[in-house]
Image (cartoon, rainbow, N blue to C red):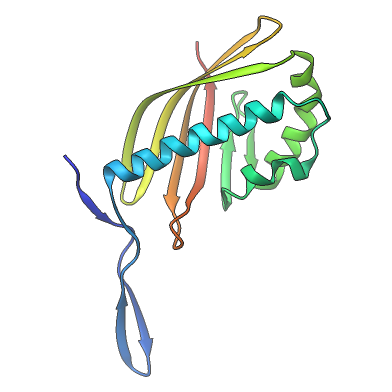
Length: 164
């Protein structure tokens, strides 16, 4: 069953003493779920390509990922570290050499669940990183996203924890 959701309240503007109602973006549950799933797949595909390159990582290499994040984005990494947008970029560049030592990586994603929270979508997924050296990292992840006024999906928060 598909429900129609209005993304946020109607915005009332006062212009010369006259209230004008401006509707915000409307989307059904299924459309937002698919958009969130697509985002998770695109971002992990981006990271797979990024981690499999030959040259050292530079902060500008992260731009296609970073532009998807809200200014207030927060990430809880598998080890429990908490990163804002800027600290996440710095941590990725710093950790790059350790990742490259493991060889090429293949990232698999399996979607576990989706929840709608008043116009925001929360996607849950299982991630498996398989490295050439035989190492496997298994994680359970979640990401909270919204659609901005231009219709783009923006990441608000993400968390990944090791799968036990």
